[in-house]
Image: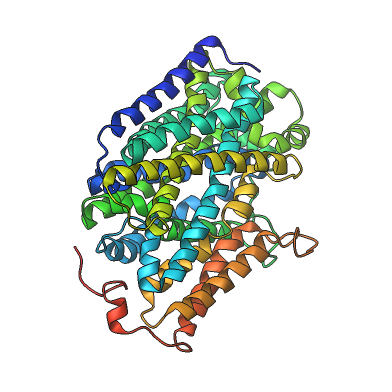
Length: 508
């Protein structure tokens, strides 16, 4: 499969536009607050859109349609609980962090407990985000390689270099503006596929669902006491709820955007934008999966059961295949730009966030803003290069497993999401908890998460425990143990935690 020259021009033009945005904003940088937080003056609507564009990435953009095609709609029931994150983040997290003059989320952990705990949180964030960056680059390169015929490893290197350039040069304002530009391209790309399938096939969602149901894809398991069942409706709802809580409350990528807004009120508004945009976009991607299944069933001329057996393992590949083979010239370039957008928005956020954490926590005090900015940009560029290296490793690993993209994300990318969030919410909610108690909760959470994620590969279980239980169990057990540990170890003094726990003062 190869792209038409017009499609290639669309993609090249898009890449050039992103680079020019980075160069434009590089001229406005005079301080670290500007480079990492947009001088704390980012409009709330842009901040909320940036959180979604960052968290979405190609992992979701490809995995949601691929998951629907291969396993059915059970995963999509997690969308029902996504808005429940709003009161938790708005009433507990934001009033606490917005009262502090911090740049990195892990500055909070260091202040609340001690520098060693802050260092642990920062190190794990960098480690996890480098893995996340690698997965993002891999998934986008995998799709682009499928469409263009360009080699996978060549695509990985080119995509990583372009994103690293405009992010390290332009800083946080570049990330915010390109994220929102990319979000609209993502939505346009996701909408174009079901619309064009309707044009080609002549049937709409109800007809697509009939085909889907005939193949047995409409059957969904509500709950099971067997933890090895891959997805149940109850399990995935818990997974999505806890994932949203932990990602918004323990990840620099999200917290950085809330810190960049001018007030508590603005930050709260950005959470509403994120949560409801999340529902709209993920619903659209689920419909994409349904439309693609119906389209390929229609043109296969095979009995539905036979088609299902043949097409299921190819779930992650159908979206890029449809883009290359079916969409009109120019439109396919736009949708391919959407796939690249999903990767580049997340990768740019990851690079900027890693740089912020490393230079804030490990950089110490530097003389002069210009010297500090040069180092910040250098660290950002280094983070991008490391992300490219991780992507190459992931490409090799994926060639030797039968995981789909959602399995890769759930088992590898999300291992430390719950444990890191324990450090935040344990500090915010439990006044009695000090460094020893929180570390006890963290290490238990990490152990549980690692066991669930690699129960088959590392611990010899015949069937792997489903990845959907990793975040809910690790976070819940970690919080319980940390809370109980507060009664076993020495509690911090009121002066040590003043202004650092929920309800310390009324912030508006």
